[in-house]
Amino acid sequence: MVNPYKIAIIGGTGKVGRYIASKALENGYQVRMLVRNPEKLSYRDARIEIVEGNVRNLEDIRKLLKDCQIVINTFGQPIKEKPIYSSVTENIIEVMTDLQIDRYIGVTGGSLTINGDKKSIINRVGAKLFEIIYSNMMIDKKKEWHILNQNKLIKWTLIRLPFIVDGTEIGFIKENLTDMPGTKITNRDIATFIINQIENLKYLQKAPFISN
Image 1 (cartoon, rainbow, N blue to C red):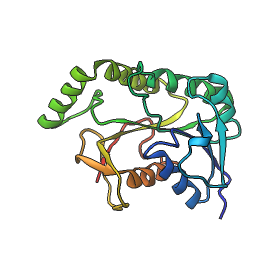
Image 2 (spheres, rainbow, N blue to C red; image 1 turned 90 degrees about the vertical axis):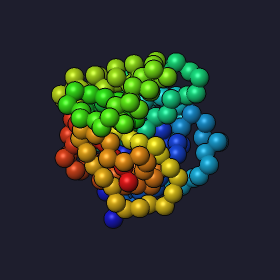
Image 3 (cartoon, rainbow, N blue to C red; image 1 turned 180 degrees about the vertical axis):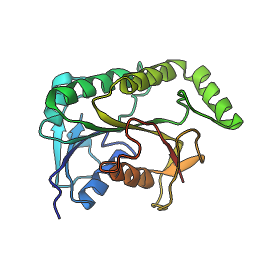
Image 4 (tube, rainbow, N blue to C red; image 1 turned 120 degrees about the vertical axis):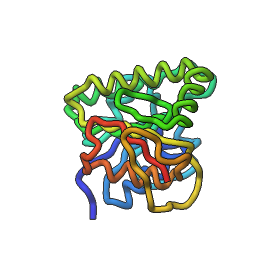
């Protein structure tokens, strides 16, 4: 069955994005993906519409999002470059608003701490270490959170992840709004959870933690 909804995927060539695309197709969704270097794609599917472009370019984002109803952002920060999570998300939200697209699903790390969290001592220590070691990245991730949290028009969900491992889908996912319930999760389980959030608005304008 073909779903009338078209999903725009940013970060579709990453360790999670490729499984999001395949899971979306499996559920009948149409898929369009932003790819910087299409010739470097490690997998191909004729059903996926490829848009060549750079996530930093506003016009490329506009080209990607046109005629889509859902945006999934699993963009991965380029190594050794200045953190750009917040600016990328800000550009995506701007284009979504212009095009009247209202469903956004993004991911971030479990080290992000927000008001209302009740993290265990171990998770608080881990989050503090991340803030010390990866200070610029964490500052930018908090800025990304504030951009989303201040937006009341977009139906956004920001999923906080533990360590991601390659592996077969386990099929059991722990969910928690105030603390990370486990230390790792498979990329395939993340993909399933994300696709399930498209129509499930349980975490509307919230940032759940998930793990296996």
